[in-house]
Length: 165
Image (tube, rainbow, N blue to C red; front, side):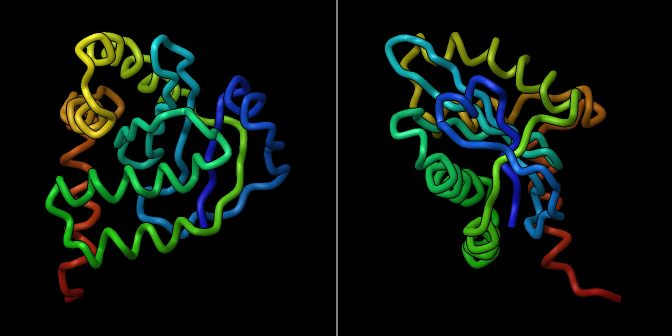
C-alpha cells in the first residue's frame, strides 16, 4: 500500500479525488510524489519517492494507468541500481494497492522542481524515460545531505538484505 501524492494539475488531469485520510505505506520507498509535465512533444509525469527522492519518469499518456507505469518504471530503475530482482519484485507487489493524496512535503516538492529544470535538457536531447530517471537519480540532493537518490535507495534495499544481529 502506498499513496501517490499528486499535484493539483495531475489530480485534475487524472480525474481522481485525493483520499481524505492518510494510510501508512507498506513500501520501502513510502509515498510517491507526482507532477504532470505538459511539455511538447511528449507529456511526462515525474514521480519522486518521499523517502529517497528517487525519480521515476513515465509517459503521461493514459494518465489513469499512472500507478502501473510507475511500478514498471521503478522496477527497471531498481534493477539498474543492482537491487536483487526478488527485492524489486517485493516492492512492486506492495504497490498494487494505492490511493491518491495531495502533496504534503515541501522538501520533496522542492526537489521535484529542481529535477524538472534538469529534465528540460534531457527531453530536448531525446533521452528515454529510463535514461532520464537514471540521470536524475545521480544528482546530489540537499534534503539528503547532498547524497544521491541512487545511493539512498540502494542503502534502503541493502539494509533489508542484511541479517539482523
